[in-house]
Length: 115
Length: 364
Image (cartoon, rainbow over all chains, first blue to last red):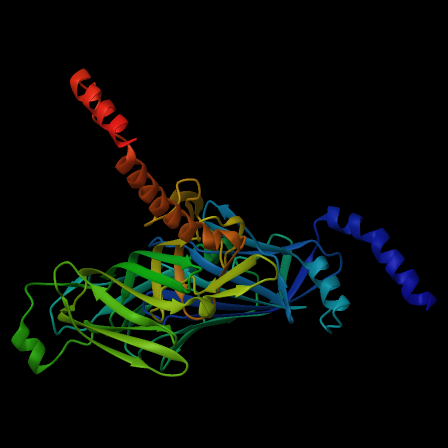
């Protein structure tokens, strides 16, 4: 019982400093599938496999939209857990970001095996 | 960790050429993303990156091949795999695919849905549509003869609305009479309204019409304990895979409803509140109209339903009948009083008055 308590305490102690550091992600796989079958909109699925030593906000951007248009719906998930996605407008597109540590914690709390 | 994101995007493609003849093939140019995925500054790619574009046809005119490797096999164009981190030039390269796709492209410029709740047992739904064909515009004039011999796959002549199974009293109207025929099919799960157009809709053309139906109160509204109720219904228009650029949903709550709360299935562009009076509504208790506006709504069955909860004390149900009865009673009272009041203010003549007094004495 003592070991989990110690590790949780350490994680809580170290998490804010890691957050402040901005995080560092090693991306091992990026798979993007763009389906153009619906005639009036496109459906993109993006699968990212990454690891992080320090947490922080993970982000990627979409666009540029040469012909105009907008993002109608965005849903991101870490395993079975939905991630709260923040959209930020950029000069050449839109950045999508989500807090990885919080999502990982939520996944562990629900008994998920994602890490 | 493995993160999966699903994005539904509008735009990013346009018909090229922009105008075609009635029986010509329609082609689109997609240029919605960059070839490489722009990851965050704190990310380093150590594995591989690959983008697959799933096309609706095997006929590909051209595609971006400056960032190699690129391959097109059947209906899939594969960009990558890339193993090195993306350079700034690669990140600036837009992914373009020019392909043939003979299909109608229905886009609703605006849709206005009105859902009116009546706690006397009915929910009325009325929907106004302004729909356009966003594909390649028709070059020249429409030939009915050509259309009879070989119908263009790019035009559409009918639309099918999927309504709730409980829908009754279904109707539709259009100003110019282009919606001439319809079929209504009911099953245990749904009601299908098939609308057929006199003139098929070609690229660049548009059509306006409205339709409506009623459902029993219990189909959309449930009790949440006490005097709290919840309306749960579809937020999106009833046509499959339809993109709606501007959607306005008006929820007309029953008179006297208060403490309402909206749970929208998507981010709203605007939300406002109005009031409205219907027939025989009491002047001090108007109906609240919640106006919800959303943009770029895709009806592909993934959005949850709209939920509006509100409080409606039971005495509001008898308010209207009591008010009508009160007004009727007031009319009767006014009529009774008016019948008994002597409206003639002429003074009685003294001679007539004396004769009457004499007659009274004689009788005694």
